[in-house]
Length: 365
Length: 189
Image (tube, rainbow over all chains, first blue to last red; front, side):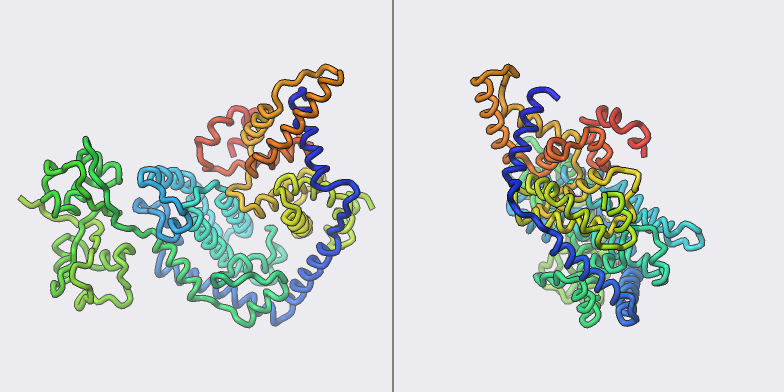
């Protein structure tokens, strides 16, 4: 150790002693003991029939939700929404960050973030699938591996704009892990070589309604779970809301001196046509009309921008752009409710802005 | 009851084992946690949580390895969690960055003996203490583990998780060093 290190060491020792002088009383045992006992209490109760039933009910619920999601939103379970090219942090994520992040930086951050999570999500998908193959003798180990993957995911350094979706994704992982557990008989828990008690799993999987603080007492917690369980809708909404965060606002960009259409398109990861088509009112499909100071509409994905005209035929409009109406209806950025929206009788206000993902059209002469 | 017995008992679910561990480690753990959190109440919660974690994860603990570094890692994790730190992984780069800050604060001091040098040294220590408070939570953790916990660089390296896919730019800088410390096997995992 050199002199500089010795000085640091002494400073740290002094600081440590200052934080807690020798003569200061420290006795954490009573509180640790109390909490340890109350955990036991919870666990013992969990062994009793009623609590086990509650546990199983929760597990099944998680499974049902998970299977349901597999139906409704297979992409969400398969790869996670991040590696889809159109991913942008949604309103919830932005709300966390009081200072707006410039678009350029945001795209850079998104790219970095996607790169960081992609390999983890790949492993996640692979291991989840392996774990489902219950004919393999070591499938239980796979659940342990899922934990490990989750841990890697959680430990990533994440820019604040991604904290919310990151947390949501973590919840989703927890939900899947719970679903994996749900496929295990309760008596098998003891044999699983992963360091997680079932109650911890369900703890993770709880989706407390916003603002309700957790009860500190785990025994009390499982009681709550028995009496007022199944926030199924909340869970679904959250996860789907998360899918919705893929959402995609139409943004604007002010043309800078020296910009050209191709550069602008490139900057937003779009085809030049997309930019051109979305700004027909300004550019009239002619790249040469681009002038510094113009405000351009930037779509979140490649496709066509369409301002709805009341009374028109929705299906015909979709057909004109060469897409199935369902792609427009399901596109989160359009904020249409796929369950209730009727393409034969669209109740859209005149002028409602629609993004037609993947849509194409002829150029105006 | 010595540490080995305490751990063995805890493994069998005997809370007296835990009590022994709490009594022998609480002061040191509280100091470590206070160094990191700079908040006595947070530190107390983090340390209590850590003992409960020890209990919950005792089956994962390899009895052939020393308890102290393992436990310290649990404590630092709990502290960073309490601070809502964005990451929980402390790297050697963090340690180096923090050391650099503190070295600068300390300034030049000779190791000569004599009243003036001693005075100078005490002042340097005071400046370093001051600088300690300006570090980020991750840097404080690195320093606390190394200089208070007395973990060797090897022990710290062993405690490092290098999640695959961590932003590559961050890793690139220290990777040669890490390779040497961790050995090829762990890096290539």
